[in-house]
Length: 466
Image 1 (tube, rainbow, N blue to C red):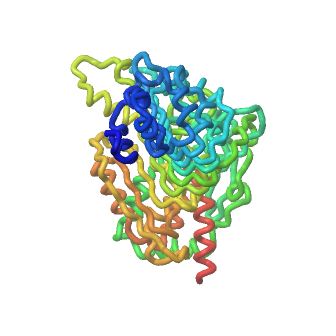
Image 2: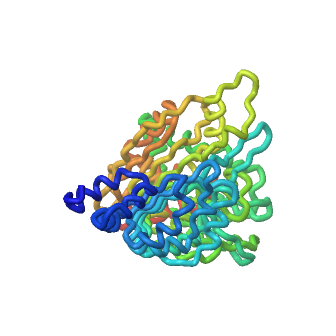
Image 3: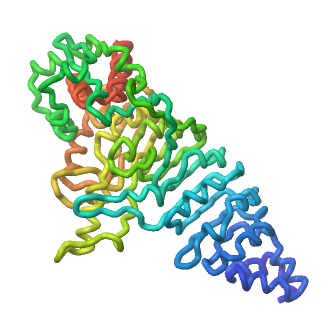
């Protein structure tokens, strides 16, 4: 064996556990040279039993590590075995996987970090199950699985990120939120009303008595737009209305400053090179209520944090089945189904996603919200055709217009029932003349500012083309 080439000995040692690999270094000078070969330590995946000596390993071989995967479980806790400062010794590290965070391990791990790792391009953070759904309440588990966005500034060249919750710290300042159209109290609601002339006017809540925007369903709008039997007179009237322009007021076009809210998202440095993101939700503050302004899939915030995103995946939270109680006769798969339906992503959260993220090419949603009660299928893939020239064309589909991806080829992969997937396929047909007017009415009723801005820009391009 002493006559074997170093690369052959290194290949043999690569199959050995870390503690046996280190013991071989004391056998002979030839074995010692093979153990110290930099290529042997390019990939480091310690077992949970080896976490006690992880810091000394990184101190000695960290400069050669390019891929590091650490997964802890049972009595071996990652927070007690790895100090964030030790990662700074891995000057060539490109891919990092950290798994097994539980309790407040992730929070304490990120708080003690003060380093910069410019070589890292891919980061995966995996936490133990944290979401708990009860009969009358739920626990989002944000205190267990939230990754502070400010901590990501330690990796300026990060290109791919997989995490659960993405936390934004809150400070008592003014909050300019471009797309957060929901209010925490009734006095803060700003409504828009469509005048007979086609103008959209901003009104207060006291002027909008009798209006019920929540009755408008995006699924119904998409089905209505996909109906080829639309009356010729209605289409002619709608087409004439679209040619007049949307005439939106400045308050609807420009990001407004949430006039009464006294909150501000912490000034986090944008991740300019991040192109792939897989996450659950954006969290502000405690984020104890699911699908609230404090804990939701906020694409507008992602557009500020990662403006170059090309691939986005929205996952369901990791369900802690061991801490959930079942009703008599309820099976485990039924409990998983109820939990995922509760945490499903609504179509409203995806509207104008391509407008907010101009480089977005692929969007995956694990479970799309569906109130029909039908079982979902994770394999529903829709290719949304767009215009490669970036100009509006007759081939623009209703779905592409709603998502804001009419200027590119786009792939949408959703976990939805066959009934909902069928509605989306019906909407994936070329748009007619009444599409802009229909979407405008929906955006006004739902108070969706990014969609209004998208329609205004699309209308301006149509006018310029004519």
